[in-house]
Image 1: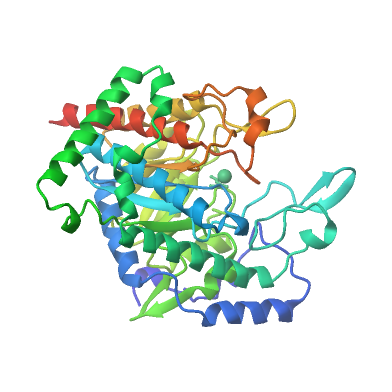
Image 2 (image 1 turned 180 degrees about the horizontal axis):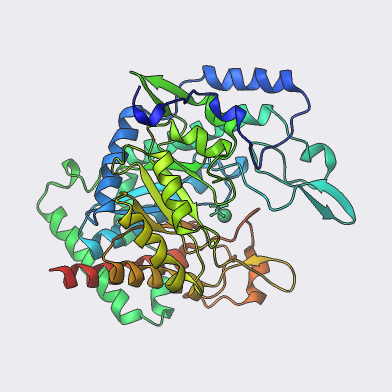
Length: 452
Ligand code: PEP
Ligand code: CO
């Protein structure tokens, strides 16, 4: 047993204090559902998990770049052909744009195939004068506003497993079957470029990508090259520890959560002596830690040291989600503390969760400019500190929803009600996502040129 796993067992988290878990009145029904989940085959292979860790180690050094994105909360009803296709399409297209800018491998990771459980700020909410348990995600209860539907139902754990499996299975089939050809800019919905303020530069980037692909295709090696073959990893917040434990198994003396390639610990469940940190410290999977404005530098160092005493590159990703207003002041001390402690981490910027606001009607939204501003701030801070921004983490969808304001369609607050579909946080839509990818590509291109 190595240092990492000392005093750790699969169940050691159960003796720690735990946040954000549902209450299941019928314990035997819960046990039965968990046993069924545990008996199911894994969703991923441990070899893939190890590969991802190697890729993330490269991202820590600025030799690869992580694109992690998807819904805030997946819903069981999203497990449909068209929804899965459009998620994969935007992720692949963004990754191609980023590869073009960075000229380094882009690691594609969906917030999908298991991103169901949600931390909530309150245990209950009042709808039409009735106080109900909060919706905690499709693997726990239903968003329907009545008491029966809001009760935590253990059968949903099994449902979550099957919906994750179906989503991942179809994603893998699309990737293997050539859907990655949607890389091809001919299939892109580029109407937004025409209305974009940065039109000339974007059209130039897109035509260069098109040329590069045409060139590769003209060499005749297309069908056998990596252009068609893409790697895709899946991730979710490791919130509901009963479920995560059931998906965890020992492979040759090491423990893997085989329900996802990577999981992250949310900003609300990252207590140093809490159950989540205890569970995650025993795993081999690369893990993310969300760091919000309340994270202080010494706490971050303690946290990552506890989670990964052996300091293996690629195991720890720090996902900062500070807010556009404070990133310039709050990020440098975090980077400095980690570097002075000699700790290796892959730094990722989540420019979504620190920039959530509410409209007068009570709709949660985010403004495209704030998202972009936190991202640009993170790039600048890392450049100043001599560290690498190793990736980005977005809440986004391939569909034409209206949940975030601004962007190429210049969506206003009044536009939001047109197609506001999220049951949790607001996501970037197709054109906002692709435009952001173009902006990041420009940044990465500048970074590359400055380094050469
Ligand atoms: C999330 O990623 O949806 C989330 C809840 O993030 P955070 O823990 O950073 O608030
Ligand atoms: Co969210």
